Length: 274
Length: 298
Image 1 (spheres, each protein chain N blue to C red):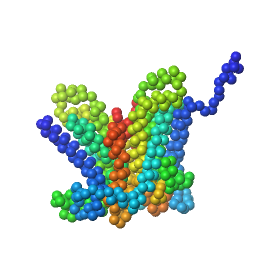
Image 2: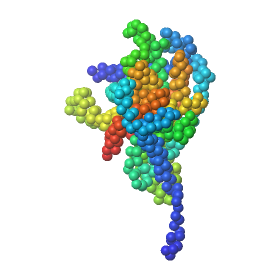
Image 3: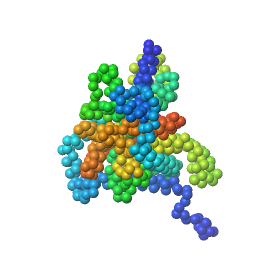
């Protein structure tokens, strides 16, 4: 009886794994197939040979290069500045006294959860008014509205759960606030900061709707917009699209291999733990 | 004496000590401008007849009234509701099963767990592209597999038929969203003290009773929270549907977000588009309030 039940669970896990991994496998393998093989009426589960031609096409025929560079610039700039700003904000909320302090965590969480599809037309109008449409500067101005609330919220919950003895001791020794933040809090909070940094990066890296409405220009767009624009052709170039989808997933896969624990904390927003 | 003391106190308008507060203040202002004020402003825009590149005139609730009489708007309203309700329900059930399965002592659990959470970590675009390609009628692997196992005779146009298209976009949403439930519920399961189950064993409870009287009540808080958060995200989902079907075929898969995008940016009726996108605002506010209450109840 007990053994039977165990087999049922193993079977369940096998089904889940197959369902999860097959689409990822299929996309990766398609990206290495030749044109003929991609559109063959009888798809091959394992291709005869692995080719780079789809990747080459992606950069030469679909000018993916600029988009990739834009995405890297936007995501890393926003992620790094988010971490610095959120570190200060979370410190202020959890360690300093000021009126309205109690509602700050709520405010940040609310700002994170509000659906982007409510805000995307207003944001478009706002950027149009200040002349930042069609440029990655516009995106860099807007993306922190997604990343800062998230990162600050996670860091606030983290700071509220850490003891302050070290900081108090340092204060007695006459350390300034800047020293306390960078010499004491920063090293202790590093794991938490790394995971929020990673997650902020991936939020920008995969962002779609703001990028879609803000940017039209071929040389200013990000990877998500560049790839989705390839979907409107008469014959959809699935080989190159798969290559693009793989590149889009690559940084996340890499980070995932080395720090899946960090990512998982990021994905549950640190709040849903208990 | 008194005079000396006063002169030694420097009156400074800026001090590094207050830098965190200053940054917090600026950040709050930034968020208020980009989220709060823009929302209010756009509620204002939705009471006009503004078009892209055109002038605007105040028409009160005209947009909203006209929308209610509009077939595609009512269609989008229906499908938004169905999409959010069904996918969240399915994600919840599958996520619970996933969490319980992952909580069993199995070899290689850490790796399996990491792999299962991958769909949630990947960019939406990647998952949608891969599913759209698998569902394709030319070279699509799903049709091929169904045909060689004799379930169907000829390829199915998964995204060409209104009903199949609806199920397809919901399936992609479920595929992507289930791990979020899985991770969170798993964390809650692992926090249940083992003693509770031991007591259950002593009292002779069977596994269903243990699930009903120990597992469910102990995970209820997390389940509720995750369900609410997933509902608010699903109500606002755009990417999955837009990248799969663009709301087609025959407007069958439009939700508020995709319809508002088309109205504002392809038909250039900006104010109307805003009115459509604002339709989920009341529900979002209610959900936000409940989520806040749930998280900050202490």
